[in-house]
Image (cartoon, rainbow, N blue to C red; front, side):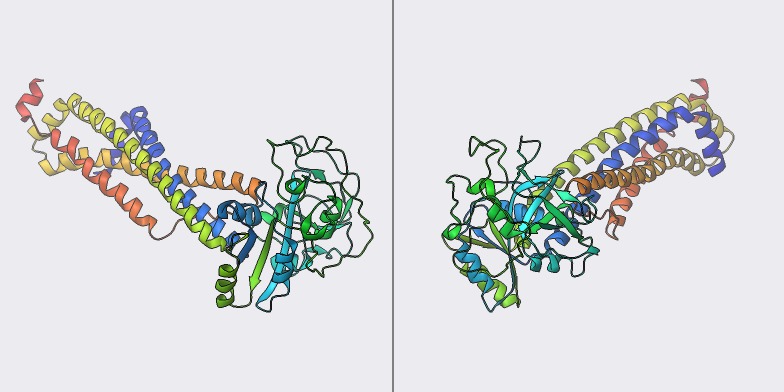
Length: 428
């Protein structure tokens, strides 16, 4: 039977190929949506695992998480330095690391922080050593700068017309091991160097020059000009000065503090304590859960569109197949007149269409997988967050559903082939 089916398909290979491609493209859309949504969910969850608790100034939880965990640029408000000092000296806290944003170099964000955060992200460096002076830097695994390279920080980004700072040039001393997070694309420098560079010496984070808080430690806001002279330096930095990671109540303000509590109970207590009118404590995982709900809604919409597309394609294919069967009524009538069993004729017509469906489904799965890999690779290149693309056992239900629908739909043309008697078919 399969020999007859394949021989018949070879006779109409161009039409068969068109049917297979149409089915493949419609199936690929569903597969791509399913795999990509899962990849984003798993990749972002793994990236957030390294950050237990975030504390920042009152504002948007989502923006705080996106800026501190995924290093997405946004103008975050500053939190008083006294808050960070309390966290750093809290016996329930294993690690409290400040982060300061706003500058960049070579398309990579420069983040001011402490050696403790670097050690938490990368317990052992892949190359070199930790920074020990204000003019030194440690780069993420995806930053294409070698040890000893010089980095001239730029206020904001080149895309937003940022100006290069002249008060300091950082020197790369080490490289972190891959973390699978956005921090693989970051350049990490001592937080005190960032404070001094932006003139933040006043109590509770006030600048020597008013109005530049968001420029110095919130991420650059491309649509807002905070001062007229971007080339003006706020402060001088002694690049050879040793770093000092002892902080007190007069510590300058920061947009966020990454906190690693000692126990789960401590994490919940700290989160509750810092959810006040002035500060905001969030679990990145909770924020991502809400984002996943939105992502799930988008996935459902895209899948509905994909299923609608597949229904349209299937309907068109069935109609074309019925017309094709009608054009072959004489051949089918001759087979029936020669005594060919009805089940053999039905199997022949059903088998031809099901083979086309099966080939299209298989090709669509391959197309969808390759498309998801391409999209994930592009996203990883821009965010440094690893997005794992792969199939799971539950995907067998999706494939099985495609196959079941194909088997049922293929019966329609097969039944239509038996509507007329052999004599009528031969006279046609």
